[in-house]
Image (cartoon, rainbow, N blue to C red; front, side, top):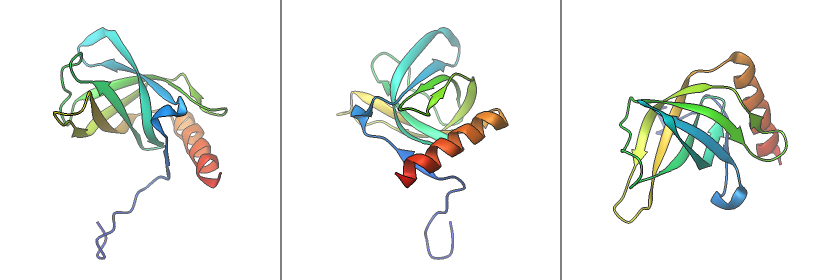
Length: 126
């Protein structure tokens, strides 16, 4: 945090409405055959946030790693590269049907990071 209390992010972030159709395919740790296609809530070149269904998925813990296999969205956002991400935040409430996971990319190709960064800059610029 900075002295004035505002956190500065390293990368710009695109925020998506649930109905936008932007999705991520997530492979869960220790469950190689289990994949979930989930709405993507936000995306930056440094990480992403998404939903996973609570009753179907063992809750992930901060520090666990997931594999993001595909990101599909509007024109210009079609990522089919494997990205390893670490769970940094878990948001689960009894009234939620889904848990929200905020993740940081820890293994991502430079070209994929650049592709995401270019998309986000364009998306944010409108």
